[in-house]
Image (cartoon, rainbow over all chains, first blue to last red; front, side, top):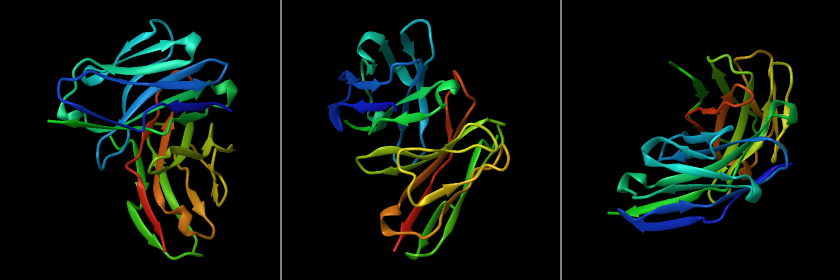
Length: 115
Length: 112
């Protein structure tokens, strides 16, 4: 069964600082990779996704992520955060239909951006 | 566009009682999922369904059951609720390969 690990449970940083959130997964087959964001009191929204092709993917709100297959990693980055980026961020991995189509999430990282 | 609708939005339930959380999607997605979200534990998969008529167990299936009689509906039932099932429950759906999942607004359940 696949699993997803997010390295940081909590991150506190100031506006304009750079953000990088780590994500590693364990699964040997083909996967789809995602980062979701959950703003306080809201449901999950998709930030970005990787299916195939260019391993550097760009999402909404200035976020990007890089898939490094050899490291089973899919780290999220943003060069300059804003106060409105305060939220919880989840990395997720989905296996193919042939492998059960399971969508598994990491434990989440709570990000607090101080104004 | 409705997307995924969950009901109720919140509920307080006495321990030992049964309850069904409803989830309906209008996107004709084949795959549907139920997760529970607990502080520090992220989202944990309870049950999932790849297509109508089939279901599978996730990471934390004990105490929960699901059914998938048609494409649109994926109800989650707690047969005899316990306080440890206090959580926020999210339903999600997706097409299968190479698509993202879409989430409902969640159901906040408190078992007392």
